Amino acid sequence: MITAYMLHNQVLDVVSLTTNDVLPPNTIWLDAYKPDDDEREWLSGLFLEDVPEEEELDEIEASARFYWDTDGLHILSLFPQRIGGETRGVNMSFTLRNNLLISFREEDIGVVRLLRHYLRHDRVQITDAMDVLLELQDLKVEYLSDLIEDGYTTLEETSEQVLNDDEIYDMLKELMEQEETNSQIRLALHDTRRALRFVRRTVRQQLSNKQKKAIDEVLHDIESLLPHTQFLFDKINFQLEAAMGFTNLQQNKVIKIFSVAAVVFLPPTWIASIYGMNFDRMPELSWAFGYPFSIGLMLISAFATYYFFKRRGWL
Image 1 (cartoon, helix red, strand yellow):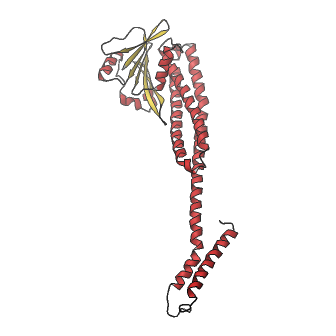
Image 2: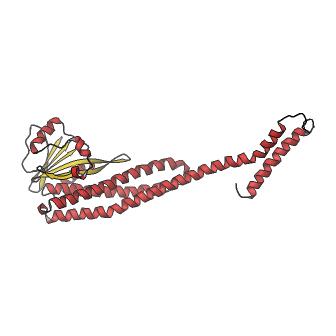
Image 3: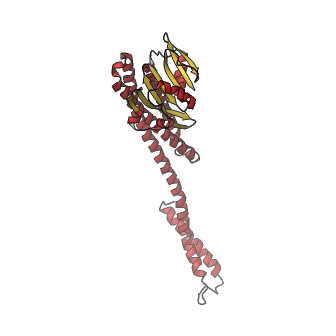
C-alpha cells in the first residue's frame, strides 16, 4: 500500500495510490507499507538506483544505515514496536531527495499512525519533507520516553513481589520482558542519535534554523534518556539477583530440614543396624527386654541429637 501526503497551503492531504496513478504534485511524503512487486516496480520510477529491498531493512552496519548517493539521503531508522508484553525493534527505510521523502516499512508502526493522527488534527506543523522525517524521530523519542516511564512503574510493582513465593515466577517473567524492552529502548535511542547526527552533518546547509533547533532538542532529549536506561538495567539486575538469592534461601531451608532429619535419625539407624545383625553370641539376643530396650535406646538417641541441635540454635 502506498500513501501520498501532499502539501497545499500548509495543509497536508492524504491519498492512497495505486500503480495506475501518477505521483501527485506537491507530494512531500510517500509511505510504502508492505509494497508488492507491482508497487515496487511503480516506485522504481522515482529512484535513479535500486529500490530498497526487504532484506536490506535489517542491515546493522553504519555504512548501510546512513549514506548519501544519487538518490539523495538514505536513513535506516529503528522504531520500537510493542505487542502485548513484548517489545522489538522494527526498521523503517527513508530516502530524501528534492523535498520528497519516500519511506518503506514491512510492519504497522505505531509512531507512523500517531503522526498521521496529528496531521489530521493539525497538531504538527509540516512545511517540507525534512519536517516529516524530523517529526517522526521526535515522536519516536517521546514514545521511548513513555516506555521508560512504564519501566519504572513495572519495576515498582515487581519489587513488591521479590519476597513472595506465589508470585516469584510471574515476577521473573516480567523482569525478563522488561530487560528486553529496555534493550530495545537503548538500541533505538543510540540509532536515532546516529541518524540525526548524520542528517545534521550531511545536509546542514539545507536545514532551516527551526530544523537545526529541532535536531538539537531531540539529541538533548536522547542524552537525558540514556542514563535512565542504564538505571533500569541496574535495577532489573538487582531485582533478579534478589529474587534468585531469595529462591536459593528457600531451597537451603528445605535442604537444611532434610539434613537435620538425616542427622537426627543417624544414631537410631546405627543402633537398629547393630541389633539387626543377629549374630549367635549377641548378649541381648535372648534377653526378654531386648526389643523395648533397643526401641528406647533409639528414641533417646534421636531426642538427644535433636536437643543438641536445638540448644546450639541450628534449628
